[in-house]
Image 1 (cartoon, helix red, strand yellow):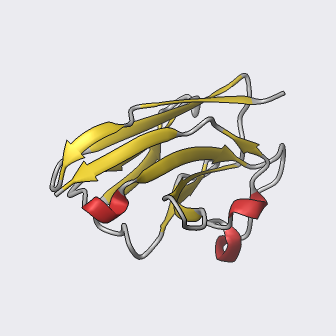
Image 2: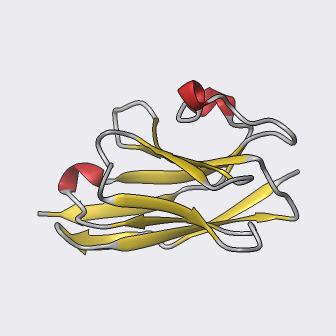
Length: 127
């Protein structure tokens, strides 16, 4: 069973920054994503990366504020979140595609395209 270990959530004031980390244990996916879910809302894709070439994709709501990246060994994926807003408050989940599979660009922010999920880390932004 693939395990994704997340860290980095917390509480900040609006305008602040947080960095989330996700470390798949003994697994390298061709695509990894960050998703979030606020109470009463559907899970939405925030950012994703093709680990083979570091191509990144973002939801319109976070473009210019969030950055997804990976370390040189491709063992950890990060989500740097700047200029945080109260509407960014949610549980954030890391996800990895199944072995050998990479969602097409048109579906890379679609949660159903990912097989493995982290336990989630809470991000709370106060105004």
